[in-house]
Every structure is written in structure tokens, then in C-alpha cells.
Image (cartoon, rainbow, N blue to C red):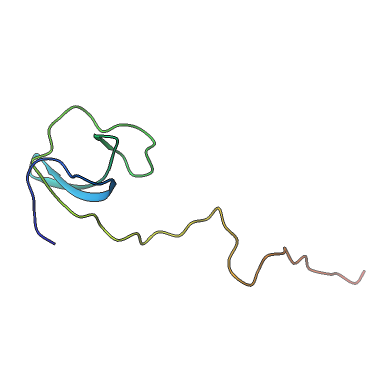
Length: 77
């Protein structure tokens, strides 16, 4: 990936440089957000960015494949 200046053209997760530090931010709707769009990133300008980064997180809203039902343990009293 190459480091670019300005703003991205497509939405996604990016590594963005601001004030000598790199941060993981999300570009969406023409604005920078914290990942997951929980809140907007401040009005400070991003100096450079690289990405979009590959998605490596797990989607916990979906059950794992092959485990669609909850198995409850059985106890013999």
C-alpha cells in the first residue's frame, strides 16, 4: 500500500496519520470516524492515509458455522 495525502475516495478502514501518530480510522460519508462509526473523529486534519485495510475482525452478530443451535449441558441428578 502506498501513503497518500488528502482524503480517500471510497469508504473503508484506513491507517491515518495525525500529529506524528498513526491511527486506525474509518472513512465514511466524507468524514473520518472511529472504527465502527461509534463517533466522529475530531475536526483536526489528517496528514496522510493508507488503505483501505483488510477486514480482520470477526462479526459476532452471526453464529459460527456449524453451531446454529445452543447446546445445553445435561445433568443427571
